[in-house]
Length: 355
Length: 251
Image 1 (cartoon, rainbow over the protein chains, first blue to last red):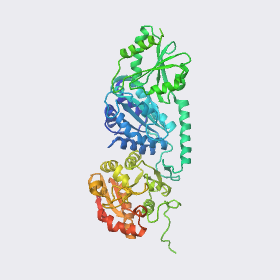
Image 2: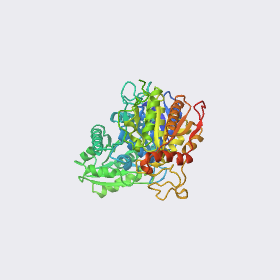
Image 3: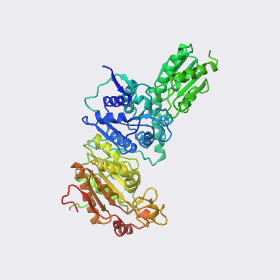
Image 4: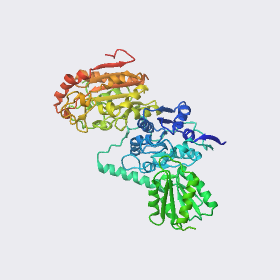
């Protein structure tokens, strides 16, 4: 299929439609509005589909809940402050084991923060985010092509494991244009999940609920979710590597930060510094085993994030004291440049006596 | 011999956990009767709320999907838009529909969502132990208005049905009560009309039911039924507030 030039936000919308997304519910917030607008223009009038600009992010996620109850592929999107509002609904989706796709084109925080790209929602995204013992799958694209590919994958994973899936992008990815290729055509017929709730016709009535008055019953449900999360860790952890084979220093970075780091690594490679990168594609499940495996050979890691050091904790947990982990980050929506990161890498490389 | 009274077919064979004199069990029964009589049992999906009536799914023998507190109208919206053949109703209390879920309620009504909201107004938060509700009457004592609701401090009881009726997408709004056999019959008619409004695609339908909560009102069931008449209906007058279809059912 021919390549087309698209904004990241629009690419998510088009990929969602091609993944059979039937319902999109959103609320305006920068820097993800192009996605909401794309769905208004391209999903709302499709046969059997629904687009609603909701009265709030809370309403939008609860509309997703309702659509998912009815067995539809449903999606919402927002940016950091709006994602905080959606956490209530995400917790209920997790509790009811309902599939849903939630996109966070994140921006600087806390509070209203800035509208510039940031990665400061890593903790919120990877630790459940709302109340209660639960996880969501978190996908971290680092290009417009990957935004599209992972959007499609998000719908499939969400239904396969009956779990909400978050796409953690950022304002920069959403607003940049790149040539991309869509690997799927939109389905002729919208799929309906086999467990859809559509009235008690030809079967006994069903209940979808989260309230469990007996703690022992809830404990059983929690452990059942826990076992599912274990299976997801085993089956779906995904990551990418760049020049790690001979590396003396490995950068761990995700999303747009990994794009910046890649440029920096090319620069320092030209200077003869053996630096590589591991880029988690799933932030939850985090590629813990893969990072730990690298410590057999590599003693120096640098976690690079556009925040004050959040994924850093997962890298430290993975390394488990077997290697030294340094950190470089810029919070607040500041976009570090490849040359800035190259200087950090060069300094660290010499400081640690790697050359 | 002619059978004049029986368990509605769509009411599960379970013993209600509700307190003696509580209005929930009456309204549950009416909903079960109406859905069955309208032959909607295979299409109906109910959205129960957190609160005493979270257990509505243990009694009503139709598909039920529990909502987060106040989000019933949004959940119902998503469900109905994804599957318009469903007949979707929410069951919500006063705190749910008229406090935390105000925005969801108003905007679902304003979009003219083809859903039916059954709004139980008992002037208190019941399951949490009788705190002030948005509909608590002035001077009414609750656990969070121990000296009586003072409008200067706590504001006034909110007439949510009148507010909903003001928005264009609302097609049918009626306030009823379940404190006498005559009122119970009117309530059933209103519930039927609210489902018919949805079937006719006219827009949002809301039935507010003034419902006794003897336990939290610290009254006997009989006193609580009388209190609905003497006090509640003064603040919340009964009758049709809006009916775009008109018709002989309109009071």
